[in-house]
Length: 364
Image (cartoon, rainbow, N blue to C red; front, top):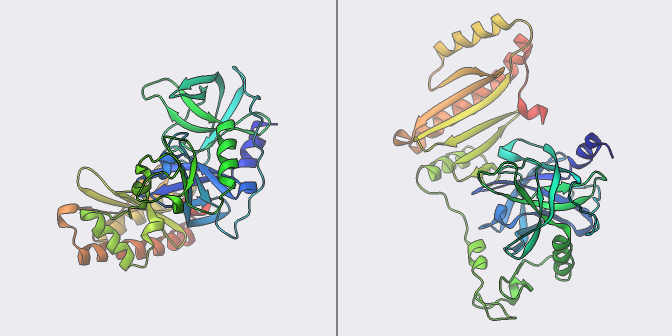
């Protein structure tokens, strides 16, 4: 199968996953009605925000956690359709085979990297991983590793920090084992005991102990704790809620939010330097009439308060910047409200007046 054909075939099934602790990748298996990802992608939560090519952001429950194989299953929301994908046979992986990894590294949607299998079986913590040289990065975790037949041969799981393209994928035999065993109790929250290796429905667990071997299961308590933002992050979320935004769908980390406003996206990031920077990607600079739109943006900057225009890689960005020391609910609410409303207005105005092109939301 042609590589571009494989990429096109999988884009609608490769899912972006967000939690209050970061982002990752997953992929849909229609037959099993689950989205497969890594346990470390959804660790600490019992629901995650998922989004894909053919549906907007929704919350979906995490059905299964497996800290041993670093696997997790998320329920596919009702009403979303996916094409069935083929899981390869367990003996179809060999040293030197060409492979393709698809995921969302650093939030860059639907990134595909090609490489080879450096070692078909690399033992690590009693698990035989597939070692690959295809570049995978933070955010790729949980994405599919594919062969040239377009079959899933593994789950991209981890890299060696500081290594040169040293990536590792969990082979499909572990995935098949987990799907088959979990299928017997499908629909119930469950986890794999890290002692006896059995998959246990949470309803069978009493006082946090495995009913099969009596071992204390700590991952259960970790996943039951509801996330609560702290400090100024809590103020930001209170403001977004007051402005009618669903913060659970907006979170891309503890200090990172992605807000959709009509046809644009607004990225809010609370940095370690204390600044809360909110960037609204309004539109792109047109190929003609460039001087006129630049002149307009400069004039508008003289009239605007608390927000300002800039141009970054042909993107027209409307920005609000607040130092956390000065962030209070009422003042912050007014600044965010102004940014959202002005971004929405300028999006339409610049496109109609200067023939600018739509921002990133309309392109994805």
